[in-house]
Length: 76
Image (tube, one colour):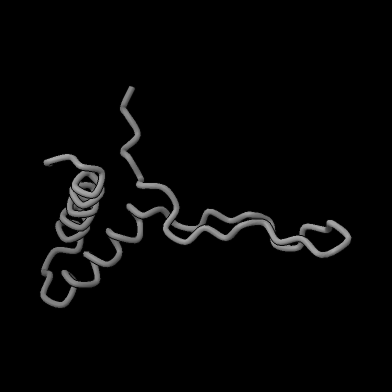
């Protein structure tokens, strides 16, 4: 069994919105995780000169994990 990596929580959560009658017209959305957002940003920076997209993707996810750990006070 593998442990799920810390995704950092929601990057852009949208709370429920209700009208005056109590109708929920925008169900809560958690959107993408901080891990996905950080990895996407790192991937965009890497792809300009990347010869190997798989290697760039691995680096981007590793960078996202390190950033989440650092933001939570870790020293990864």
